[in-house]
Amino acid sequence: MTLHIPFDNSYSRLPDRFFARQAPVPVARPELLLLNRPLARDLGIDPDALQSPEGVAVLAGNAVAEGSEPLAQAYSGHQFGGFSPVLGDGRAVLLGEVIDTHGNRRDLQLKGSGQTAFSRPGSDGRSPLGPVIREFIVSEAMYALGIPTTRSLAAVATGERVRREDLLPGGVLTRVASSHIRIGTFQYFAARRDTEGLQILTDHVIARHYPEASGALDLLKNVMARQARLVTRWMGVGFIHGVMNTDNSTISGETIDYGPCAFMDTFDPGTVYSSIDRLGRYAFDKQPEILGWNLAQLASALLPLIDPDEDAAVEAAQDAMNGYGDLLHAAWMEVFRAKIGLVTEQPDDVGLISDLLSAMARGQADFTNTFRALANGTARDQFLEPDEFDQWDSRWRARLNDEPEAAPLSERLTAVNPAIIPRNHRVEQAIVAAMEGDLSPATRLFEALSRPYADPTDEVRDLIRPPTAPERVQRTFCGT
Ligand code: AMP
Ligand code: MG
View 1 (cartoon, helix red, strand yellow):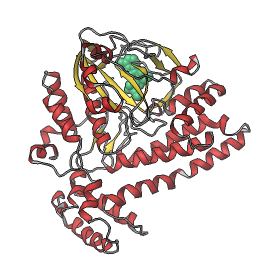
View 2: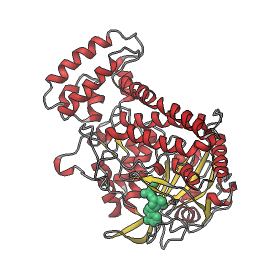
View 3: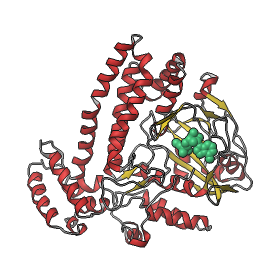
View 4: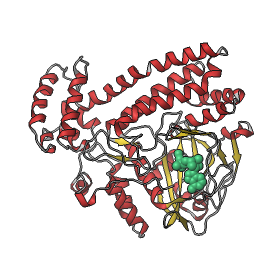
């Protein structure tokens, strides 16, 4: 069988200053570890062909498939609040785009595929295998939860070692995204005062992601709405991205960059996992504020396109940004109202939801299991001291009396409150096993996470349990 990838590239048609053409750098002994067969079929690629030596060579970067025009994208970004004018794909290569079987344009990108023109000085352009497996598992779990995200097509071991603090086995991830264009891509052209480039990028993005948008200001408002929805949906599943730099905020509204991310076990709004986030900039409950900050960077990059008169542009952008607070609040309420089974809106719903979260924090309740247990009346078991929850429960029951008879309550609740999430300790265990050559925990997790809202069978019950003290993972490493 021969590999055919139906490339239909558009980014590579943009002006030369948008990227550096760059083939992936071959690796010593590629070995396919994980392949996402349903995703391959969605992309119109034969999974068997991808599994063949010819396919694995492409997934490892050892061969360039017909129609592929590999390139590293240029971008800038604020990282932990400091601006880097030149970042770009320092360890990733866009292979090209395909139109999937649903008619959607999707990027195929290799991550960990060697140095590019944008590699940080002294950096190898590679990725350790551990973070590759983490991204594969967690991004696919996010997809199964119904939350917009980049996807993972394949994970390949390189047969080479990468030097970090230790020597670690290397890996390459094939990432699929509706595009890899980020807020930082706009910042790249804005920092150069390249208004023509900004206009070309804006036109490309509007055609690709927001055909309904009427111009730069409207694009800003659209990105704001999608990103607000994304971040509140993360919060609805207890997800902490961990590194919400402006180069990790997509224009499409998909989750990108599963570096030091994690799902919370015990609910604590100030939770931080990332080993490099020492000040807690990207803590769980800081995410809406940070998104607002990132959107302000997009607004400022777009100014020359919003209005040729600078004062008028600033006023219009400011006006759009002033709407962010209400937009975020509405998106948050939509997510959390559904999580407690409410279909209608009442003024005190915000108080009801906040009081549950406060009780959960004080009662050291498991975030996922508490919401899931609302459906079968056992949520009180999740609390160290259930009195506060019991009081809340009576208020909640009273509020539910005002709801129309829509779908039964337990069905409404289980449809939005997952049973299975990629708990950090399970992901860590799967990574450790994979490094020792045993892929079965990783594939088992991948399978179980594909049905997060289903009633768990006995075989997956261990995946629902929060970590015991020795199992708990305190910090997640960026792994770059
Ligand atoms: P990331 O953590 O992958 O989002 O990377 C942030 C920035 O650092 C991007 O510009 C990357 O391309 C660059 N970078 C990260 N890791 C490496 C690496 N191993 N070699 C070269 N550049 C890197
Ligand atoms: Mg990144």
